[in-house]
Length: 539
Image 1 (tube, rainbow, N blue to C red):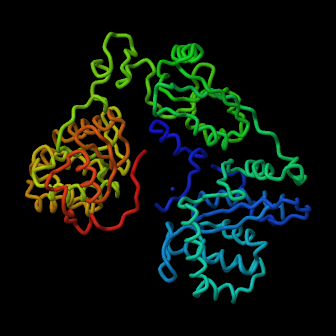
Image 2 (cartoon, rainbow, N blue to C red):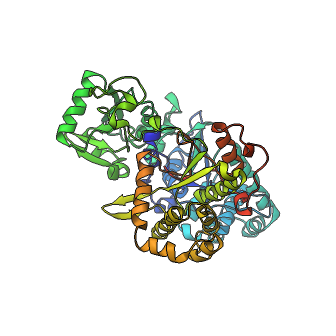
Image 3 (cartoon, rainbow, N blue to C red):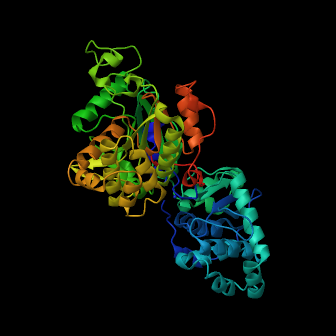
């Protein structure tokens, strides 16, 4: 699914959230003023919706606000239970948005002890003022008639700490690391996040015994979609997208078309003629009715008009008219097959193996990339002269302007690091590792001196050729389709991911067995050993 990774970060598709390892709702905070109870008789089946959230996460709050009118309409037919995402044990609990979030989490759990059937009213009250979560629980307790003394004792005492620690453990056990994570009747919730989306999905669990409120849900706008892909591309499976897109467009009607069919080629050629920038697969073509759908506001920024359709831009990179470099077929009909075709120059399949080489692709201010740079320096020292390291950088060159995910200061450090690599090939990794230990520190010159590198040389390069060196480095990453920091290449051929020195060592030895450095543990810098959650920057 390499080509769909950019798509999966879109609103609604990837279920955006705050992730401790980061949809709009049709409900607003003012909806919390309404009571979440209902006089309507409950159906024989009670739907159970489990939420795993962080109290201050805006995505979790949006979902909670959207659920307020749903709970109001369905009453006892919907049970909402809430657990929280974070880390630690009693006395040392932490959460992504800081101590106030921990307090907010605890307050909501403590309120649940006093009002288990109406706890969602308490949560909705706190959500009216997200910035004050951590302190507004007292006012909400008073408004809802809770025993404030008991609530305060729970929030400030051992009971609250233990309840939140248990809640964190439950979230971890269920694999809930992003806020919100939801389960409906024990299964992952896959519907949309607007109030009507929740109503449709939850009402679908009742069968014939659905409450009257379920009959009052407006029907979704019907939207036809063509999922256009190419079976020859082993990284273009578009099927996992359908349920995610259906979450935004519940009236979706999908037709799969493959480029290899006559229909697929004709469709591709027609749209290519309408817009010369069209052509990379996979893609989704929506009919114009999508603009009338409730979920269109969340998709609009990713949609463009192409011919008679609205194309949903997936970031596809497969050109169906180009040579495929590893299938033994002359795909583009020019008489050259696979790596003999000039279109395959630089393709991963056609790269020549270079023993003992490690290529590392990073963003210098990415915490994972920084850890990988330190670990690679440790590993390189362990192998002595048996490991050759090259570092490449991930970013963009738009009309001569260089940019990177973490801003201008990252670009500046990237430039200095490519300069160090060019002019001091035997010392640049020590410089990189030093910078990576505290990349927010602007004093790069101290690291240059420690590594035995001339600050004048680096500055001269920075002011002169540095930008062109970085531009070429960005181009190398883009040519290989590498956008995730850190990413490694072993021996110029095999891609792998690692953060710890022992893992870099293991992967390197997979392609270079029998070397002296493959035995024994790598001596690691304290910064390399410091815990960092598994992850990466980029897509």
